[in-house]
Each structure stands twice: as C-alpha cells, then as structure tokens.
Amino acid sequence: MTFASLKLIEPLLRTLDGLDYKNPTPVQVQAIPPILQGRDLMAAAQTGTGKTAGFALPLLQRLMMEGPSVASNCIRALVLVPTRELAEQVQQSFQAYGQHLPLRSYAVYGGVSINPQMMKLRKGLDVLVATPGRLLDLYRQNAVKFNQLQVLVLDEADRMLDLGFARELDDLFSALPKKRQTLLFSATFSDAIRRLAGEMLRDPLSIEVSPRNAAAKSVKQWLVTVDKKRKAELFLHLYKTKRWQQVLVFVKTRKGVDELEGELQRNGISADAIHGDKPQPTRLRALQRFKQGEVKVLVATDVAARGLDIDDMPLVVNFDLPIVAEDYVHRIGRTGRAGATGQAVSLVCADEVQLLAAIESMIQQVLPRVDEPDFIPDHRVPQTVAGGAVIKKPKKAKKPKVVGGNKAGGLGRWLESDEPAEPPIKAIRKVPSFGGKPVKRSK
Ligand code: AMP
Image (cartoon, rainbow, N blue to C red; front, side):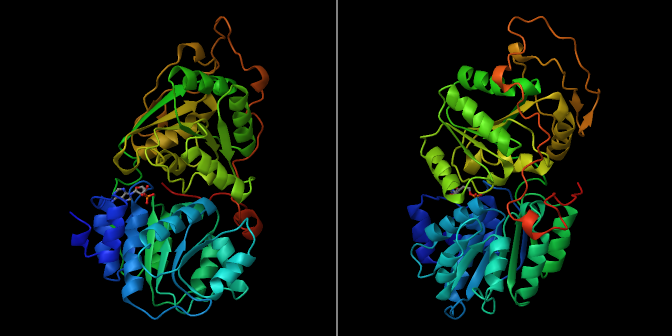
C-alpha cells in the first residue's frame, strides 16, 4: 500500500517523500479514504500508531480542495486536544505535513498570554489546534468564530474527559455548526467516550488499529518489586547497572518529580523535569533538551505525558504506577513507536498492588516480575493473576538481615505525603462539578 494509492494530492506526496514516510501505517490506511470522502469517524488508535498524520493529511487535502477562503477570526478546521504539549505537537505535524500548501495553522492553549493568540486569529486560520479551556476563553471574547467550521477533530478524547474537560466540551459543541465532519480519536473506549461519540458523530465509521485497551505489542514490559522508600535507590541502581541511555520516567506527584530530578542530578545524571507547575516555555525547553540528547532522564507527571513525540524512545520507567489504568497504555505509548521496539519498566511497591491488578486486567496480561536481589522488598507485593485479581493480601514480611538493608537515606520521606495525583491544568478553576477528579470510567 502506498500513499499515492490513498489518493493524496501531489504536494502531500512530495512532503511525505521528504519526511521519508515510505508506507502508510494501518491507521492511515483505514482513516485517510473515509475522511477524504467526508465521513465521520470513530477511531481507536493510541499514540505512536501514526494517527496524527491519519487525520492531518486528509484534513489538509479537504481544506485545499473545498470551501471558501477563511474570513477574519474564522477557522475551517478545529482540532481539540487535552494538553498544551499535545497542542504544540499536533500543530507542528500540521505545519510539517502542510509545508507545500498555502494553508495557515496555529495552536492555542492556556498558561501563556492570550493576546498574541487573539492577534493571530484576526486574519482567520485554516486549522486551529486548541485545548478546550483556552478555546472557550477566546470564543467568549469573540476572538474566534465557528461559522466557517467544516471539520472538528477530537484527539485523545479519553484524556480530555479524564482531565475534567467535559463541561468545556459541552459548551464548545453547542457553539459549533451542526453541519460538519467530526473525527474522534481515543486510545481507550469507556462508556463515557461512547456516549460522547453518540452525541457528536453522524453515522460514523468505526476503525480500530490495536486490540481494545491493549498496550503496544512492540514494547517489552516488566516490573521490579521494591519498598516504596527505596524506589529512587533502585532507579539509580538500574540506571547504572543496565547502562540505560535515555529514559522517560513517570512519577505520580509534582513533588515527587522534583525530588527525583534533584536526586538524579546529585548523582551526576543529567535530568530535567516537566509537570503542571512549570511554565510552558520551561516544559518545552526540557522536552527539547531531552529530544536532543542533552538530558538523559526526563521526569514527568501524566499531565505532561501526552504529546511527547520522541521517536525510537528506548525506555519508559513507571517510577509510580498511574492511578488511572488507561494512563499505563498512554505512558508506554512513548516507546516502541512507529515500529521500533522499546521497554517499559515499572517499579512497584506493595501499596500499588491494586493499581497493578487494574492495569493487568486492562492490558490482559500479567506483567513479568524481575527480582533485583538487593532490593527484595520488606513489604511483599502480592502476586496478581490473569484477569487482574490479587491472590494474597499485602503482608509485612520480616525484615531480612541484609547488610546495607534499607538505605533510603535522605530520601526516607519519598512520596509518602498524601499529595493527590496531579490535578488537571484547567479543570479545577473551570469545572467545579468535576473537582479536578477523573470522571468515573467503566471498564
Ligand atoms: P503519532 O501516532 O501520530 O504520534 O505518530 C508517531 C510517530 O510516527 C511520529 O513521529 C510520526 O512522525 C511517525 N509516523 C507517522 N506516520 C508515519 C509513516 N507512515 N511512516 C513513518 N513514520 C510515521
């Protein structure tokens, strides 16, 4: 299968050739023809499958072939995404894919000044990539009008609901023209997503490129059990003994991110961190330094996870397991991308066994355990079995008389606070009814 056989126009084929995209990925094969025909689409596709090009290419082509030129403050295509990072990422993809087309695209998101965004919208844009909160602000200030809107894309729709954007999405949808093409992409399909799809889509074509809720196959996944207080020590041990090169590490809390970053730096490892407290330019700089290899370890919270487009990322470490099982799939989607193989390692303590069971139930496999002899936990992590069950209750084991036993040292209070998982960037201020908590998801 070639891109030409998908009936893409010459300027796009030229771009793809320049990018060295030799063949379309499965999601591109399935999504491009129906999108070109104007159909609504509901696509189960996770990050790393090439889904961005799957919607961006046909969308650019449709904008080239149809419709009037864009009027002041108007937009012709809107791509809603959950995070600032993903907004930048998707916008960069539109720019790359549309480099030989006379179309204008731009990204708007919160956490940066709104004025340049208003200025940019004045001339009108063919494609606007936006996070829901900032888009609503712009709409309420008359900086953006939807009367020319032809296509709406909801990218990572599950994540938008997780981040508490349901109210903002409702407000936006009621402002959009009813006659439009709508494309919904989601890594996972909870009942809430299916309901949203039922309301938003007109006779949609459903496509699925990986088994439902299954983690990427090209990723080798394993876990090491460890006592909570020794996670940082274990990470350092693994980093050194396994000669890890570039690692993306997920930590539950912002405080935990900062602490791990500090500990790594104290041990001479170049590390940077991204989380919701950091200003956008700082996050983008950290990401850039990581991509360029200046930084070996990037420590992140889940909010920062979306939209990290890092090719051939060899390794993702779950320093803490995610609270929401679906996030596991999103996290490890950072590795094994576009055909490359990768590894995902989880450092699991006894407190996390229920989270582990939920993840294993969702990915329909029990993660293999690899013991690190010097780190056998005092608090054993009960065995889990297929189907996500825990077969033994956590039980405090007797302290082994190991020389150098529990060496948490200055890290003794690591992640022991009851600090909640990172709240969404926008949701707390904007959506009191959700209170920043993930919406209840059914499996
Ligand atoms: P995505 O799933 O959209 O985040 O894309 C994952 C990565 O795959 C990105 O780095 C894209 O540049 C790359 N990619 C997308 N489509 C192709 C293709 N057909 N051939 C090679 N690489 C691709």
